Image (cartoon, rainbow, N blue to C red; front, side):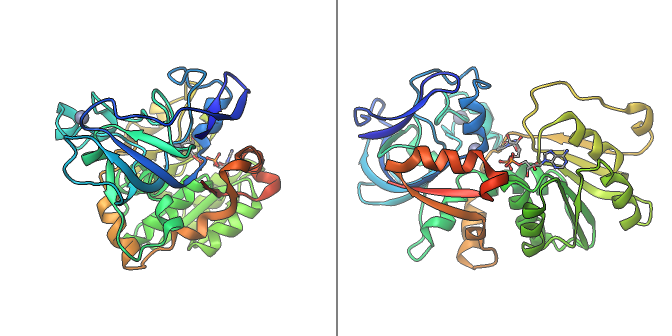
Length: 345
Ligand SMILES: NC(=O)c1ccc[n+]([C@@H]2O[C@H](COP(=O)([O-])OP(=O)(O)OC[C@H]3O[C@@H](n4cnc5c(N)ncnc54)[C@H](O)[C@@H]3O)[C@@H](O)[C@H]2O)c1
Ligand SMILES: [Zn+2]
Ligand SMILES: [Zn+2]
């Protein structure tokens, strides 16, 4: 089969690989029909993710059709259309029982990381019963691909952890696919104000279309002043960090109202200053989270009811044969205006 393979820092190829086989009774083999590229895949290609070794097939998102199910798989059979979760969950370990699937001792984020992933014609899914979701009959395939990772990530790490409530004020720093997913799902709770902050005007324009009440271009580093002005010098109730840099996290620290929450989503590679000398008496909360995908069944229901349209996040489409072009487009988002790219096998 054809597969997109990481060959060590900055090296990658579309290569011929053997079709995966069932190795445990709880495995399923899924024929991938649509997948996508995540910012995390770009991090892997740069060599930033040590758990991902060279030779690995990348990809942790997608939908497909069950090709083969191991003897212990009871919920799925060949021919079933399924959504692949970016998080593999055994459903039985201590962390799974606490609904922290991301920390499953027999899974977690392993797809396209420590085991071969979805940017291929077929993928092996361990613990298939608790890592795949049945696709509703008339659901839109492309919209569903956004449910593997980015929507649960924006919703769980940003909106739920950030305790977004009716009438509250929210600032989202970073209008990439994850920040925009937080913007879409924050609206389930009807906040009064959603301020989107980025340095890319094109992404801010998208944010406006997706429901942001105000957008701020932070190229001059003066977003704080504008947020304070917009909130009557109080600051916001929820600041969602969706970039992953010290500067953007520190911005969140400075725009928070007393009693507010900083919900960190960004993956941080360096240390960040925590200004307790300014925050100790402000009753604030800081949360961190690796997406658990516990909200996937709920998001599937919402998708079915057409209350959100995650398809809005899709800007480009490619065939698997042209996945190198897809990476090129996705990797140069500032020029190509790419958000999510669909790769069809
Ligand atoms: N916690 C989790 O489980 C989880 C899951 C998936 C992704 N992530 C992380 O979420 C983050 C966002 O992901 P993404 O795919 O949307 O990334 P992205 O790179 O596409 O988007 C980041 C955005 O931040 C903007 N930005 C950069 N510097 C800025 C600044 N100083 N001020 C304001 N905006 C700035 C960029 O213009 C860009 O639009 C990444 O760090 C990613 O690794 C976390
Ligand atoms: Zn991802
Ligand atoms: Zn588990």
